[in-house]
Length: 112
Length: 115
Image (cartoon, rainbow over all chains, first blue to last red; front, side):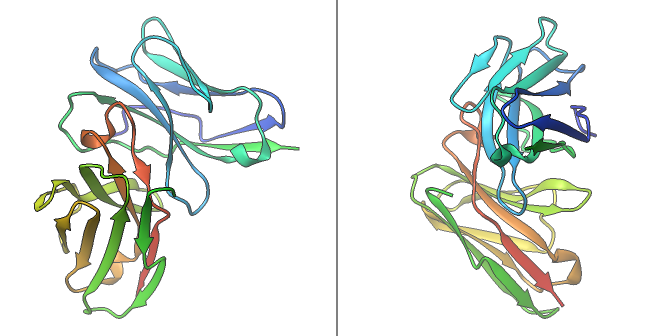
């Protein structure tokens, strides 16, 4: 069973910020939150990850709640090319368990 | 994807024939992985490698074997292809185990159809 819960789909207007939520209420103290996206028929692309502090890179920002039970991926100025399926995954840094749980993700549609 | 290529990109094969998929990387990453992706199942790990000649099974390894004789190449072989192995196969690489800290870099995938 997936450790994360995401809405199946979302819409966002081009140029606006896209905020993708993820619930991970059973996350443990040593587990990180990772985000990937997968544009149709291509391999998944790593976006960002974090433990408890908010993180930002050239692609996105990751906001993690203080209790770490949920997070939000923010694409600050969404473009049509950001239309994709976004996956939220939790895992431990020292976790030797290869069994990453890839759920169904959120299908984000950016509308002109 | 930069630094990782899969071949072939598409293949149709007959049931019972052996098939080999190739993953080639130029990043000199220690870890390499083979995943399959099917509707309703997400990505599932088949086999992975943590070094030359060092491999281990993933969650769906039955019917598959792998080999890694060089750092840059990771081969996936379907010993006797079945229709249930029709899928999209992705290779991935990472500098640390299971994508810790840096995430995975995925290839563009191989679409395999077994008829």
